[in-house]
Image 1: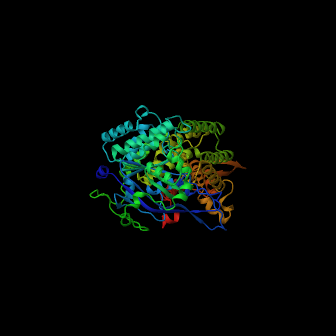
Image 2: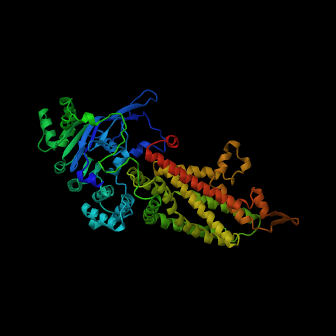
Length: 624
């Protein structure tokens, strides 16, 4: 990597062709669209077509370009020109139909290129409750193999380079949480992607949404990074100002997916003048060229950028329609095999620490949820206070158990916004190779365990003893265990469907529908014998069935006396209650085992779905 930085990276690309299939209408009930994960800011207009036949839209047409170290290449053009698509192809996010990318005149594969590059998306995907310093430190821990002292020094020097010393201990914030400004947030996003000293830095509209002063500061900072560190900076930008244009070494003008100019702004001005176009004094050259793309195409239909036209060796350097996997940087020792900076265990520890800081600072989640569980336990305990051991008490206990499960499993969406926010960050970090998806899933699952245990205790302690359930400490501990597993099962369900759903509304609706279906087939409203044969599978996969049975066994297995008499004869015992449900002492730990299996299954499903999302593939492709 050091040898790469010394001589820099010259990026060459030629004959990039990228097509996308356009459907006539979208599916109104689709909850998972892989296209949204590509985050392409080039919306494809819906085209008319016959029946359901797909039509291809040519997003990029034979695009060729070159970017040099110590320089900034700006990709400009009107909306829908293909700027962001080109950047995502260069970053390895999208695989076009034909393309070839060379680094220092040598072919390189996508995985290897991610090691020497950084890609800053248009949207700032950061944890809003972490500070600037914490954000960069976690990024350094995930991407760098350095001792603690060196890692801290590197983060401090980067903070100074980004001009963020005065807000190093301020939280990032977002639209809802007060934090740093938009320009400062954009600098943090850049810092996250340059913490590993990439030789190439790609940025998708880094000035989007910023005022002119902040935009100029961002581009000026990128210019310094290019000149000081020898980085190759490639960025897309929309309507740059006069001062910003002066910082560009070269520009690539795109229109409708085709290259209209590649060279300096002075060369662009000369071509426009030679084409008979007069540039007004108050309009900068790039804005004028974007407005005049139709005239440029008419006047210069055969124009190709001069540098590529004058170099005949490019024909020898590129091989079209062939996936090339080779080494890069003589003596650099790079291979195409992906190697993460940390072991799996270390990744899990780092991610758990980051999740814990971000999650435990969410006051709405912890304060409200904690009060909710404590108050619910107290209210239920006073409503069902001191139930007696009779047939009526037995029925009231069964009703209490059913309500507990309904309450705990129905109010499970409190973590859904957190999971959805983390998914956006996950997609970005996985694409840059910061860690493994399996490490994320494991860390995400472990970090909630202590919090859910606290909730289970706060709910169980007042409820259990006020109601007068089985007076045994072992039975109480088993009751707490079941409540804990129920909460964790619900959390796992939310994690699974948050990976599947595209937004909070869809995720909330799907989770509510699934939980309602599980409750219906739990056996409380309709017995297992009365459920139609073609629906019986729902009874066995219901999340209500096994904790309900665990409650029943824990409570009634210790009832030795008679619950009621009629004409001197015992009508029912605790054992009769369990036999009526088809339960016995053997079901005590069997139910726990099934609940753990559900937890593992939903976590595994979330892993599979996230793998599909990150690879932009289908479930069938992943399993095959």
